[in-house]
Length: 279
Image 1 (cartoon, rainbow, N blue to C red):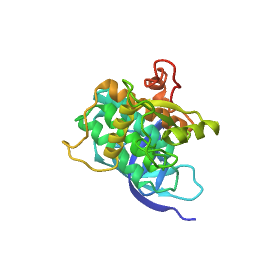
Image 2: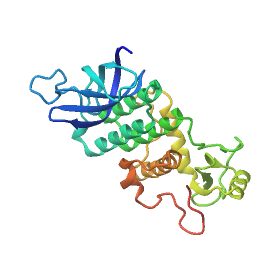
Image 3: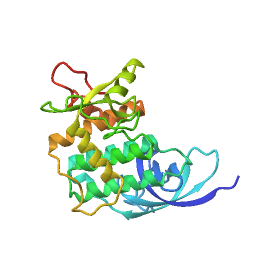
Image 4: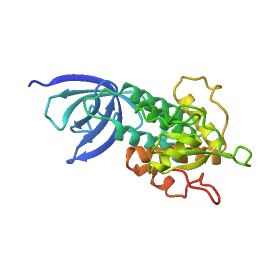
């Protein structure tokens, strides 16, 4: 079968040296899914790929695709949007998380325009620096889960779709039942049924679930710079991200490498005493 010349927008996911002067790149393209390409002579003095294969940039790639080939030769690369995320460590680390999640979800030959657009938007927000990197990251994570059909129920019951009020509404910090395996927040009745079915059910602060719901709404709509929902302090952002990151880990059935340090800490939303930790 003859090779087909293709061109598409792309985000680089990973890069590997190949021989003395070449580079293997894994990229998420908007309309062709994940592609694995060989950039020959990228380290030579006169290369057509000079400074055009950096992580975090939006690129236009051109390659020659042939069925059954593990690596397709890269024919051209052009920078569409240059980002400077290496100047700030927290933003760099958040951007690495974005690329790793995209890499875990992307599949060869499967167009992924929604995932691609979510990734571009997250990288733009991190590069602009108008909000904390943790906020941009957790907003991306929630949009990522929604794109995969795995969005957690945060305000209503994941099982019956009804109200899921706090278990003790008069408590100083009200908590609601929550189960990653059951899809998120649960009402009391559905929580009991989930436990009876062998699912792990815990509790999470209602305030944290509410903040996560606000960020989830932000993730699914375009918004102006002055329309970004309520502000959260660093501790509040960490609490929300703890919920979302552990939910991601459960449903991906793997702990992303870039999440290991964050998730190595004890659960930030665990009840102090006498209650079941959420999962």
